[in-house]
Image (cartoon, rainbow, N blue to C red; front, side):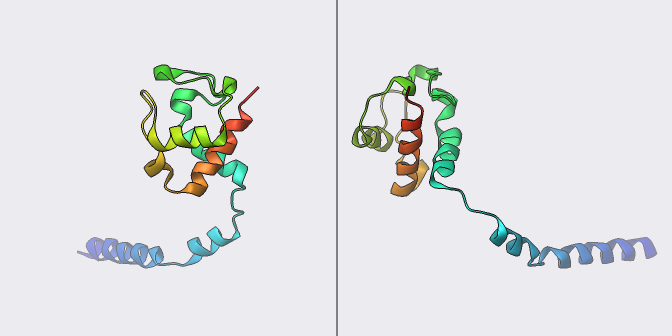
Length: 111
């Protein structure tokens, strides 16, 4: 019976500590990503599986991005609508700003 009460009190203390605001104040001190870092992160999560980190992988028929000569407008159209096995990325990238970050990153992969 005493053991149950001790466990219950420990459980309540654990729950009380979950409401601590220290976690949110730690996030405020973290530096935000630069546009280049954001583009690289989005590319790594959403594109590198098929295109590879360096853009050269070509998995599932993906184009070698290091050889691409497409304009920003052409890249954006492919990201929005998809092409061949590549699905549309508009919903995944969520907004125009993220799409622009990815486009800028893709251009850094060119030779």
